[in-house]
Length: 140
Image 1 (cartoon, helix red, strand yellow):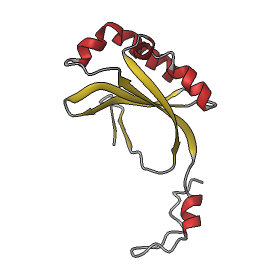
Image 2: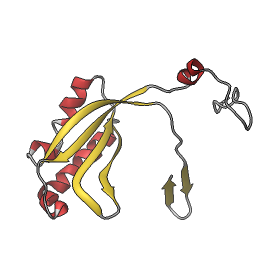
Image 3: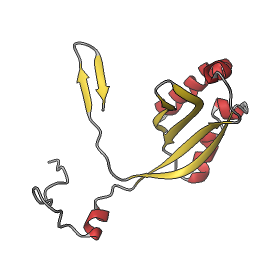
């Protein structure tokens, strides 16, 4: 039987749970965040990164296939992008996460500087929708 974690929550109105009860509900799943920043500002980041973009994508695919990559994406707002990105990975330790980060092609080639931090997944909601007939999915 799967529970939603809402069984002890009151209906509409103030939440009567204590701070300790709230903290017990945090998932505390350990991940590591790789912040991948450009070494310097460029006018056309995609053009600048293009010579190593295929290798970067293959690296991401390999990390995903090996169960390392949890989430990854560009640090962008609409069409505003400075060439930076973030990846959330699984690793046994911070040192292991740094070692994985060091193999990322843009970092290895000196185009980006990677900084690794511990990151705990505590709360949030993920909604997935699959349309098998239309071969579509959405994440929201």
